[in-house]
Length: 392
Ligand SMILES: [Zn+2]
Ligand SMILES: [Zn+2]
Image (cartoon, rainbow, N blue to C red):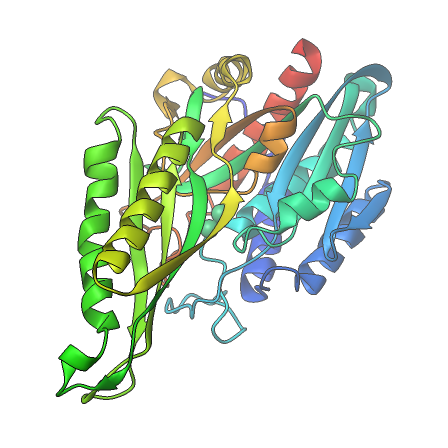
């Protein structure tokens, strides 16, 4: 049997569930995590840790071991999503239209409880563990702000890690792998401009609806024809708006979408093709197309050595069968900015429970997690941190 003690003790199990439910009931959007931040700060201070506020609602607290050693940062996100929760569980969101649908309530809870426990074990630690409670991951602004305000300095961080819940993985299971985990995220906006006028006289105008439709179709060749079948990439258009009524050709059409890539060279090539096709198709139809790009996160590529050390830690803890190999996802996470500045690695925590109907995906309005996974996540994080401090 895996030794998850002391996180399997009834007191800590209860503490994990109580805190997670409290945060789940009070979800807050990016840079508004005031209550969440206050809850975490109070607990860390009670555990004797010095807490530094940064990035508006973010927090950092260091657990300094008695012996000198490396510094490992753990990132835990605190923000929720603008989604209305549909579950009828007793601990469902009390904030209309806001919900913890990405498991950040669990991440914050696990990091807090592990910090509390490690604060009591400084004599066993060599080096420093920095617990970084980050705001605004979902709107991709929190990590950069944390870094700008000193989250990875004094002492300089040698490695950054994070855990993320995964509803595709059974509760009780964890996963890690070296290599790409999350994609680079480009947020794209297209503005197609033509010439508006009466819909009955299209020959006198430039029909932006027709131009936009051609652009959407032509963009389908960006990934299929310009990147290797062995290098994953996605280009999706999530919204398209144009016109106000049935008998007028609109002056402009706006589209909003995203490009996801794992390799900087592939990204550069696909961005170039996307721009050339968008502007070229527009020009061929006497319209113009302006493309704006917001590069919201680089890819997260797990460091091979850190991933190996994590696996070496997780297998004896949970058993070989319970440690899966993480699959890359085209989702993105601004943890990438931490991982870019030092070595980085993310591991996954399974939260699925088919018998209890806990199967909804991340960002789903019915998302929930099997709370039995909380002690598994906490024990994993605790053990991984100890390994990394010992090996780096
Ligand atoms: Zn999310
Ligand atoms: Zn998330």
